[in-house]
Image (cartoon, rainbow, N blue to C red; front, side):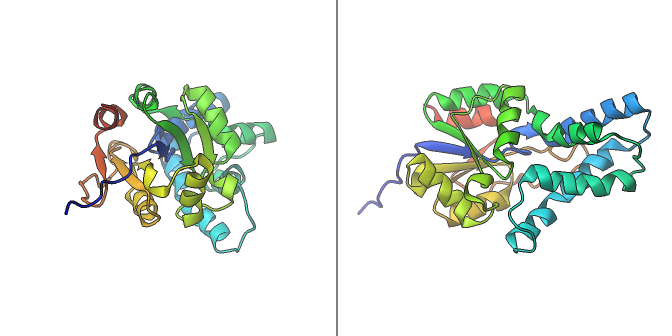
Length: 240
């Protein structure tokens, strides 16, 4: 007897930071613009890496209950407030600090992102499933021209990935079964957590997420349903 066929994938949800947009290159660019304007001598690549390094520990404080529910914009600001003196950045106005913090709203997409998403959208519902808050993701979509059908965020269910409530909440909000929903990400831990909740999984490689010298494991994992070089390759595999 043949095993039952897997349900058809009806919707795709995407991790955003690193998978859809180049957070590191974008933050470095924003830092350099500020540095030229204010004559600051800062290693903006190290600054970007340090800012991102504070992301998981900050979310862990929320997930553990140490902090009440706190959206990513506010967590980014908490991390930034510690980074500025550490990197010798002083004398910025509140407006300048706020503008820098909102650099995460202005991240640039990877070169294949817009075209790949447009192709995927022909056959599937496409939505974010990011730890970024809704306002951040909406502003980013407008800035980067990302053609989402829907913005889904950890903020909606008040659970950060990899909490199961985030993945299962997305399925519920889109009106599909977990097996009809595919999580697309460049991060294997995100995909393993989604798979544990019954979602289908697509791994998209982003070898330059951490810059030309960064190390990213892009080896194929049989546990994932799809392995793609980029969004255009993903569309070739899913949209037939």
